Image 1: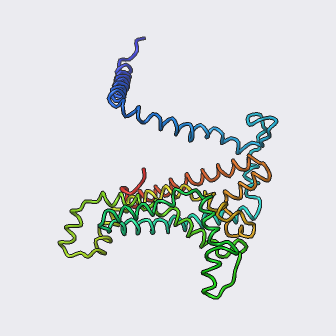
Image 2 (image 1 turned 90 degrees about the vertical axis):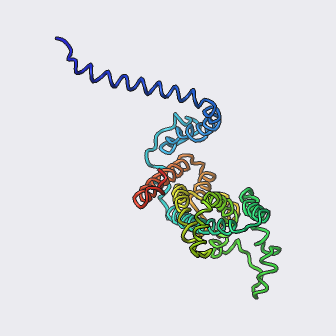
Image 3 (image 1 turned 120 degrees about the vertical axis):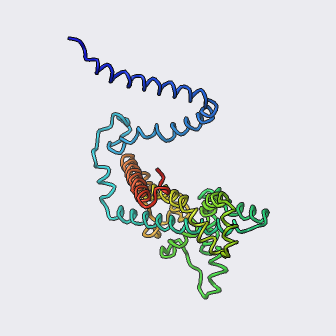
Length: 326
């Protein structure tokens, strides 16, 4: 029995199409070989630091012990996740983490955009560069250094606020590290001071990319500076704002460990309002030496962050396809 010619006819175009695709890929590799070589070191570093560690995700499902090693340790199923959420403290730190991050994302976005617009209106180039330098400098300080700066303000005896500012309002010396009520505001101020400056640089770069012709046309139509900001600057910044917000949502269940651990000096009296998932898991790892629980917490944060990014991007794509990340 002879093979129908229709079968050969259907396979030949597919094979030739694949061959053309391989040839096109090879030509592009040769054509862009210099750019690919420039990209290679970053790709290697990214693969080593971000993809190879992903193979350790199974630690979250094992009862790790140092005798048997990681591969030889017995499987624990979902026990590590049950232990993570077995106590009321786990829900408290989860709520703290989400609440802090929501406030940081919203207020950080508003302040970054406002500062970027304000700096863009400074016409003196020297002054503008000076303002940008002053704003981004705090971002290069580690949280250990920031914790000492905060401590210099809040020291129970010699702190600037305690010794010089509070007496002006009739308050005596107070140990801020023993009172948790004020720390949500202290941490917010510290976070904004540390990160808003570098965040505004991104929006400032986006503003400089806006065509001056739009502003000139608005001026000819009699638009005030405020109307130019509302009608031109903010709408054109919206795609960048949406993309950065989507990316920030991926870390909604993560937190700045240095901010919540070093700045608060890990004071037990402050944990009701300053304890977050990262500090809670860190203390559990140090005290219990439970690698499985720490890995389970990290896996939980990553999975939730992934679905938050996907969900936020889907919502943005439905509202306006041009503002979606992908």
